[in-house]
Image (cartoon, rainbow over all chains, first blue to last red; front, top):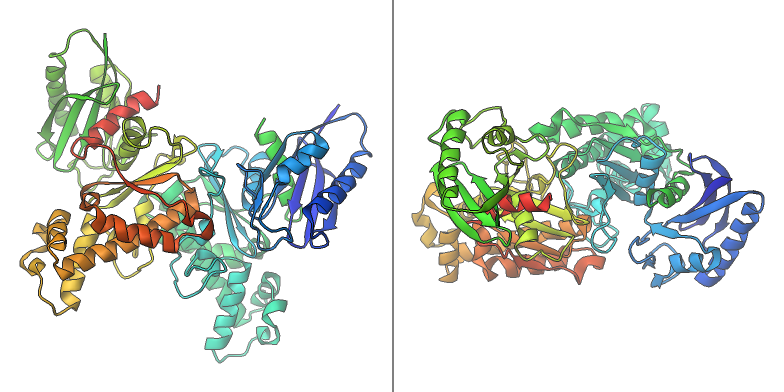
Length: 316
Length: 316
């Protein structure tokens, strides 16, 4: 008999689910549009129907649980709390809703913690007990394992490293505060850096043809690799700041490795080289020789789904 | 039969030990001058003789272990590693040396972690699983409990919160880096702030009569309470920065409370009021209502000894 888990990645635009075996193989997947459902009740009904349809393709299996990664997903309360990019307001009882339908254990956490659990169960952190996964997306998320356990804090809200005080204090953050690391170190942060450079430097750049909303990390990486000065400089600035942030993470957690995940991390050496150099330069003496920055070993497209599914195994 | 532990606080000037019962009562104590012994071997021989003398006063007891708090004390390796303020260079095999003499379990950690363990076993954090003790001394130390466990990191070197990037980047830290929180938020930090103010403001202050080396937090607090403008302003600046640092700790660890320990914490409202106000102002929305900053409930003079002794109970 096959043991199966379901991993769900609730995103602002789409919600993806996957049926995953204990080795982390994605056996089936599908998705629905999150934005279409203004009522969570309708969303969960329709999404569950879709999942059950896919499960019908399997015979002789045991469903051990459902793991869900979502923005502002709270592990301890089982609710999504006041997520600005989702259509449902206030506190949404996600875990209870899925338990009512599937009658299996259901786990919820935020996207960065799901990615870290995925890295631990299926990825590059299998043998590590102290490591950190940084997710470089719209914001900067962190999933922190210390002593073999992921940090949840007293109420499930721990891990917001992206909102710690950074080394540059000149940008207002989406959270309302000033100087958070994620104002520089994220896919949005590098776009802000590009626009800053286009404003301050009178040199030509292919990036002058892009509106803020049509620019992304992939485009900036493409032009950086082609030699565009602004694009290269933006990666250098972002990488240095990322390295400074990682030096702080070593001071606080003394991890065995830091993994980078998400669109911006795909830029490879453009990001990793300045980050590694700056992390070593800024680390305390006792940490300098230990700095290890690695790309996530999870498949990017379905990492959140795999990470979410891994929660059903991590808790057993 | 009485169950006893020994707590040892190795400081740059003196080393204090205490004989402690399971309720945290200090039954006896004594001390020697650390600086007198340039060889660790001589130090441990003489210090052990002193401890054994005191133990001879007790009859019918069981010694369960020895806990040691020391600057750069490493829990995992059992060594003091390259402590700049101690007379012994390199890595000092502290744990093994005491085991050889006393034949009981011996635990070593740094002073801030010992204070946090003391707060958990004997102090205000008895019923908490997520809390942080900040030690405001020469530097800024942190003992961090998350999910009921103290954070050691992969190699015992975690918890150096005082060396994270602060909100003000204009001071060089003793660690060689720039902008660490402890350049402002520590007993040394407030002295630097006083000297900064004396340099920049052309107003009269009683603090103009003090040399840097003869000034301490207690003197600054005394004059602040008497209305000295520079002293008051220095506490305000230090408190605000402490509050900003605590806001960051809530983002990362979402603790139930933050305890303040050490000479500077004794200043009471002078420090706590601006700190609380700034912590709430700078915390993320989800944390604002939860900020709780408390004075340590450990006796200041022997807290490090009690915390060190508590390690022998925490590990059982």
